[in-house]
Image 1: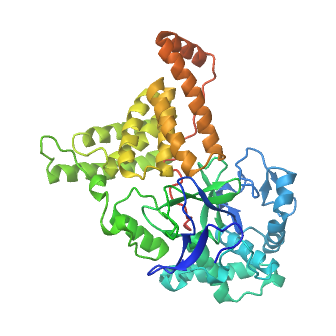
Image 2: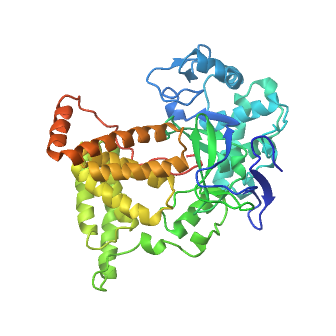
Image 3: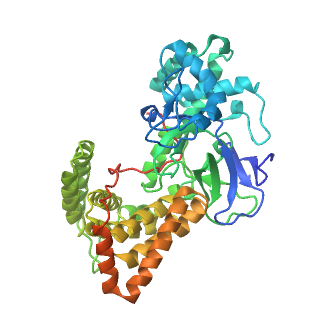
Length: 479
């Protein structure tokens, strides 16, 4: 079955995972398999007043809806574009007396659209929402209690004239959101700002080592091939970040998505050995007791760091990172997950504190470890290389900085495509660092003189506070 702009794919029944999508033609790395606008989408509760409810851009000043006082927009253009979706919501908020949470708002928008379209299936949609998996039967007792509460609130929130779906179907929609709600990012793809439902994307199954990735570009999700795919091959994406032991990934997938992962990387534990590797010199490894002590110290330090980060005590964070990395260095290998976690934290926080030279050293080690673990066209690897390259550039280390930015550019052209804002940003960085590198090679002394003069004449740029997390998971899980 193929329709609309979905001519490259077709639905098929897998042996053990229900329905899936497979390619109808050979695909190259970087090819867009399909693009899909959101069926419905909402801004996160905590970003209601900071993100446009139409285009999902983060703005300093937004105009609010004059009737419900809840929805916020960039300008009149965005407000008009969103009116079809917001019209029922606007009435519901005023009748209910307040807005509800993001999950109920998304469910409402889905059902209002179904009512408007009289449940018809558009040409470019491969499946009706009724046929999507909901996993309601797999919910725990606690989750079922929450589901019943959500259905009750939704009933009260809705305008009385729109209550023509029974409770079973409302539960189904909440189940679909719970399993398939897709994280919507800001315009540069760096921060999660909302959640939406993309019915065609819901049909793409999981693999920890997938052949596709998903990004949001210009208001649509794009499913993009990250390596060559043969006609007839199943299309897969990863629902979770790869940097966890296979047992941990499987537990996470079972808990959040209600299935047992049987991909090759999980069943064979591929790269688990690297993720928990220890140093080996002259055939000798540290004792199990020493490794256990270092891992225990690392776990304790992470708990302290979480607390200090929440309070903005960045000097404490850097002190703990340095102390922990010093203990880890003679014991843990460069691909060990605990070492990579602290290298990432240290480089990010030190960059924020403008201590770029030290941050660059940690960033270099971090990406060297990532390159041994991630798929060569993994978007997280590309973003990490970009950040490491920028850190080296700020530190005046133009040669390695330019090299990392070029590597990142190559990956992000595949995962994000040439028109994505982040790819345009990194292409500009690549051109700038290439020019500076030529200058550096012609006259190193003059390059550093000009750089120092430029920095003196430039206002200090304060970087955003480190969040510790970038968008690593495609699908949004209800907190």
